[in-house]
Image (spheres, rainbow, N blue to C red):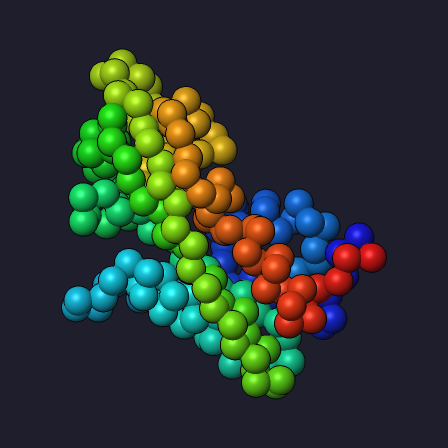
Length: 196
């Protein structure tokens, strides 16, 4: 069993992050922080996900200073373009067309804050994903599903979109939205969790 040394809040409503933390048997509350996710001028991808994860964690931590609070942010980058979450079938088709047959990068930043103890730790993890060429019929089928529409880059590595992926270089869970290996290492190091 994994125990926490205090109340634990995930400052995200991401089903993937909730699923990954739940795999540990961790007890936590969900408290999304609605921050503006736009890039700042000249901001590098790593700096962007670190800044947003920190803003999300700090927003919830201000309301609950005694709790451990974790914020996270994930982006997909290909050839310098940031791929957000597609809102329409046309946007999903455009994104998947860019990813088809190419290698793209997934960055996830995460921040853990406990305001009452003056603790703030943050890190970012980078993974590369190689897609195979996506034939038109498969792309049309995928776009008709609901899967692309709430995911950065318009696909789910753990869902139906898995068959587009030839190789992953780096953390699989990072591509899902939370680099679990690095997160657990940080949480243990700062005394937020304990494996008993």
